[in-house]
Length: 115
Image (tube, rainbow, N blue to C red; front, side, top):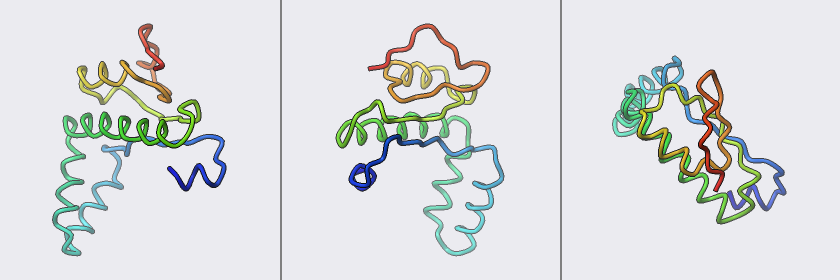
């Protein structure tokens, strides 16, 4: 984040990895066959719906904290489809959804807090 700010970024975009796409499965397989068992296991975990939802909460919290430390949170854009989130994880994110752009048919929720 520090480097991005030093380069003068105007906006910062990120999004959680798509756990249903084939890219993670292929990445997991390549890591496993290459002997990177710890990394392959971590990716296998993210591919599970419950773990993916928790990963998203951690990702958003981490990125928000880093952006707040180094620049203006108004520059952050986190693209997020809430349909795969566990209900309690969606509630956690919506408590502080600064930078989150809610996508998809479930995106509109009246009680958001852009802290």
